[in-house]
Amino acid sequence: MHDLLYIHGFLSSPQSTKAQQLLAWAAQRTDIRVHAPALPVDPEAALAILESTRQACTTAPGLIGSSLGGFYANILAARHGLRAVLVNPAVHPHVLLKAYVGEQRNHHSGVVAEVRPEHFRLLERVESVPAHPERLWVLLETGDETLDYRQAEQFYRACALDITLGGTHSYEGFLRKLPAINEFLFE
Image 1 (cartoon, one colour):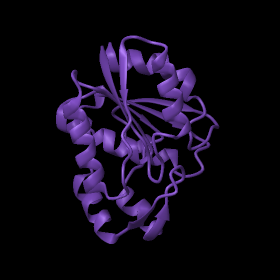
Image 2 (tube, rainbow, N blue to C red):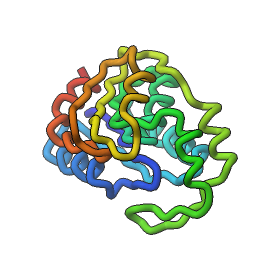
Image 3 (cartoon, helix red, strand yellow):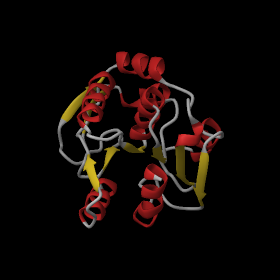
Image 4 (cartoon, rainbow, N blue to C red):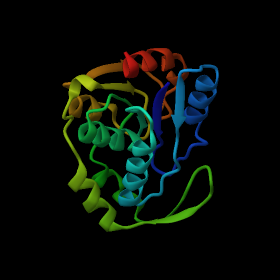
């Protein structure tokens, strides 16, 4: 049995399309147990939840992180030598998220949380160049309307890159990639 930790993005949740696709796909299998915790906007609290979830796994988990979740997956992969798939990952979120200072509503739960400047300091402090680029596979779609895929292409240039023309920030090809993702994480 393999543990797989799905890490959603900023203002997203385990109810996101990708998380639900992953859960439905894994339900058809007997060899994968998916963990998909709901994360708060506070990065310190989010990282604590992710560390706790990782520790609760019975095997070294494979990681799938989307957007800000990709940023977090890179951190966990570096800290613990894990394999990770980063889907349209956020690069330099301490800069990207400054436009969101103040109260923000979660897209799925409706919960309102405050994004504060101290969140950016922590994000900048924990940002990490890939420690083990051979353990990361970065999936990018050029049509990402939220993040410029070229930033991730540059930041993760030492990693395996899969760049698809078109698409969106949601990464439209996710469901088709799940067998290859599974193979990469647990080969």
